Image (cartoon, rainbow over all chains, first blue to last red; front, side, top):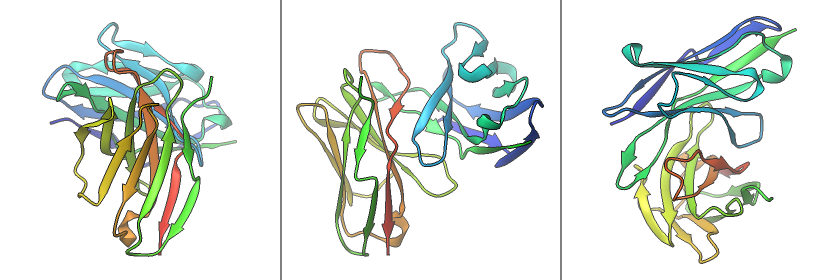
Length: 115
Length: 114
């Protein structure tokens, strides 16, 4: 079985500060990992994905995530927060099931950016 | 290139009623997945359709059913609505031949059951 734990339902940072959103996963096989972002009244949009090619993955809007197998973590970071980064962020893990891949999502972390 | 479109955007129903939600996948995609997102929660997988058949199903009761049409569009039907069915229903599309490709989401249908 696969599962995702996102530590902290809310993270608050000042504009220009480092963003760190935490994600730990559980998977019985090497996983595929994703980060999605959801802006108000919209669907989810892919930020980045890990597919075992490289442990440090760069995504859109300056975000990146590092896969650490020993810690079963896939934390999302951005060096300098911008007001437009305020949104809900979801980590997801995916592994094969019945011939297809069905992502399991975490509960989400709301990023609040203060001016 | 049209993305995933869902209709309607909002819907209000009464307990016990039935509802149908619609989804058109991103152009070129052949697989449609449906998710339920309760307020303050992550999306929960309902089921996935490919080649007009339900390929995978999450932990949802039989009141939730679906259909995929030859043009790859899809419907989600919910019977005997409960208050707890109030949520944002998200449709996501992907391409089966792209191994574990990311999902492309629509903006969702907000269902309120009173």
